[in-house]
Amino acid sequence: MQKKLADDLNKLVTPEDMEKFKSSEVALSAIKILGLFADGLQAITQSDFVIVQDFLLTSIALATVTLQQFEEARLVDDHYVVSVCEHKTAASYGPAKLVLTPMLHSWVRIYAYHIRPNVVSRIKCKGNVS
Image (cartoon, rainbow, N blue to C red):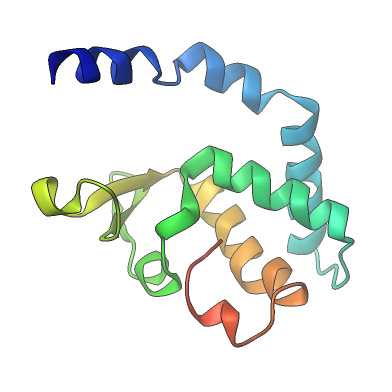
């Protein structure tokens, strides 16, 4: 058990890793695309969709966040806190708390409500954010 914990700690993303990611070409492209949709762009290429989706998934691990959980985020100290019920250690630790900056929250909102529905069928859009 201790070896597993040590291995897991060694695999954690460092603040330096996150800074490199935030300034990467892919991240900057995704932010530009999100900005275009915030300004009212209504069409998206598959390539741009993938760039935005990958950027957001990498930024906050959205895979198990539902739209309802996202909509129920609470504002705490200028950050949005989303309770994520479905994750590997939920039985032991309860819902995970996903903390989003206001900017990241707005990007996820643009993605979930304006970009994703252009690519994913409306029926599938009712479930997870990703």
